[in-house]
Every structure is written in C-alpha cells, then in structure tokens.
Length: 334
Image (cartoon, rainbow, N blue to C red; front, side, top):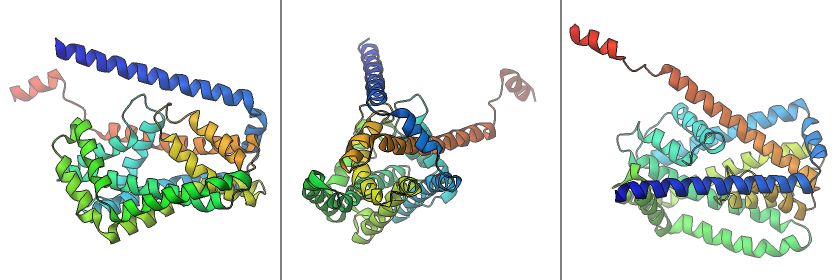
C-alpha cells in the first residue's frame, strides 16, 4: 500500500513538474512575441541564401558527427570499442528525445542506455557520457571568454568573472578527480539502470579518464564541437553582412546555452529564445535579429531531432515481430 502511494506521489510530482515547465515555456514565448518584432525576425530567416541554408544543414550534422566521434574517443580511453555509425545513431536519437518525444528521460540517458546494451561492461557507456559532458560544459564556458572580452561597454565588466569561472573549471577538468567521482556516484544513486555500478563508473572517471592526455584530448574535441555549433549561427550573421557580430555570438551564445541547461522549461523552449534576445542585445544586436538566430538554432535542433525519429522508425521496422499466440501453438505442435 505504501509503495502504491509512493508511486502515485512520484507520478503526480512528475506531472506537476512537466506542467510547470510547459507553463514557463508558454509564458516566455508569449513575452517574446509581445516584446520582439516577430515578422522582421522571420523575414530575416526566410531571406537567407540557399548556400547559407545548405551550410546550416551541413554544420548541424557535422555537429552530431563530432559529438559521436568525441564520445567514441572517450569510450576508447576505457577500453570500449563502438562503431562511429552506431554512436552517430545514438546521438541523433538522444536529440529526438530532447526535442520531440513526450518523455522526462534526458537525451544523454537515452544514448547511454542504447550504448550500454551493446557493451560487455555497460557501465562504460555511463562513465564515458559523464566524462565528455562535464568536459564539454567547461569548454563551452571557456569559449565565452574571448567574446566577452571583446564586448562593448558594461558587458566587458563580467569578463573577469567569466574568466575566473572558466579557469577554475579548466583546473577541475584537467587536475581534479573529485567532481567526476561525485557525478558518477550521483548518477548511479538516481538511475536504477546503473544501480550498483557507481564504484565502477567512479573508477573509470578517476582512472583511465583521469590522465592528463585523456582530458586534454577530450577538451580539444569539445572546443571543436562547440565551435562547429556556434558556426551554425556565424554563417547566418555573415550572410547578413554583419561579420562584427561573430564576436557577439562567441560571447553571448555559450552563456545562453549553459543557462538553458537549467530544467525550468520544455526542451529549453522560451528560455533559450529569451536569453538569445537579452544577451545578444547586450552586445548590440537588434532584438529581431537575435530572435532570428534563435529560430535558426531551433530549426537546426529540430532537423537533427527529426533525423533521430527516422533512426527510431528504421530500427523499429527492422526489429523482428513478436510471435503471435497462433504462431506459438504451431511451433509447439511441431
């Protein structure tokens, strides 16, 4: 009886959390539609040249490819071998879960679960995912430093704070084992699928993945990954004839993406667009152009998410059908 009440309470909290996130997304989108000229923003996107659109599409999938290669590299450090093709599909599916599918399961959890099924030691999927995610977050903050330093006026005042955070984060990634061990144990305590694997995950994070070479290589690939992601927006401002706004993208977007990770909305919708408008505005970009970049970023994410849905449909079609009762009976008769 008590267990039933616990499950009901957990389900109720899940629904309330989802409802709150939907409400936040709706409220923020409504605020943007009220405050920002939407028609000029959409017109700017519609006016992009075919070459720019092609570059956005190409960079979107290159973004996924580098994510898959980065993950493959992390797996190799702990002795796990996975094909690039399989990991590429995992990353696409994770993006579908993040953007399109009605579930509270995060994309990172989904791709780790998919990969774990193919590994002799399933915990390696989790330790590699934690490792490349933590390093990638620090790389994102590091990329914001040059852009903030180049920013006009009062925005430059936060450069010192961002720089200090970036240096501290880099020091943790390169030299410290504790944050990785804590992350591994926290995941293992909260995810039933990896129950009992906390110590093995922690050993990976403080063992093979703790070497200076492993962390520096992962940091380098994480920087490349983030630069390609920012390149999706850079080609747009170049199409507009505003090359000076590349610095705005470098300074504002990493900060916006870090803050979008806060679990307060559905897939970051509303939060991301608001942050684009506010932060890019601090760098001197017109609000409608900032919203245009948010639309391009959302379109890129939806493109790869739809590709992930296609992967799921193909896998479902290839999966052998479960035998019916009649088939079972004929089999027993034989």
